[in-house]
Length: 328
Image (cartoon, rainbow, N blue to C red; front, side, top):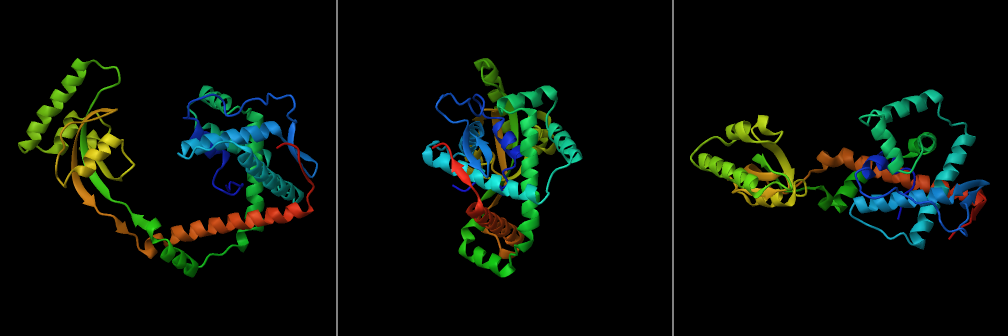
């Protein structure tokens, strides 16, 4: 497992990725009296056990959200702690070099962050769910920025990826750059909700049955969508644009990809209600050309190289550091 501090896993991303997950706060207070207060000491600076538990909670929830749930065992604990030690070493080196954040930077950062919430109440609810105080959140932002600036100064300028390297990577990994099958579709939605009566559901189905008869008789699907659909896409004739598999709810996706171009489905039920779907175009899977993805590949390779060089830099700092592991 490679996490480390350079991945685009900023704390703001963590927060918004996890806010929608059900459950209690991300970590619990350490309950065992025998558990030491600090998980490690790095050049005399502590890494608190509570901070380790907090990061383990983040890692567990993030992994679950990405569909790759993990078990927090001794190996994972060791790897997460190892990552925290690396970040602490980089942070210490950065502060020795005089890198800090200004009060104005922090004020602007917090102001921009709070704008993502509808009001103060929602912001405070986030703090509670993340089991973090505003002061600790500021500290996380500051540490993240100090490390980012140091890496930008010491490592990033030395990283260079050539077009030749990008082409070699492309040639070895062409399957990664296969544009998936896509369909372009319109739909008409008559909404129903969980708990609606069978009578209301029957009315929705009857409405769509009548509309399907009009379509089969030659009526314009888009015009009927404008007049009848209860989806935000209605003003555009129900047009959903192109989408690939995995973008829509399963029932809708299955029906859409089974249709031929200009074919209209029967009534399709999803969690949103009942739909009529018309597919207006199909795009077969297509191999993207190197020139189409060159910039993307070069950025990906550059980020990987920065990551590797940062890890190597931290490994070098470890040689002269005094590190004590106080917990298993």
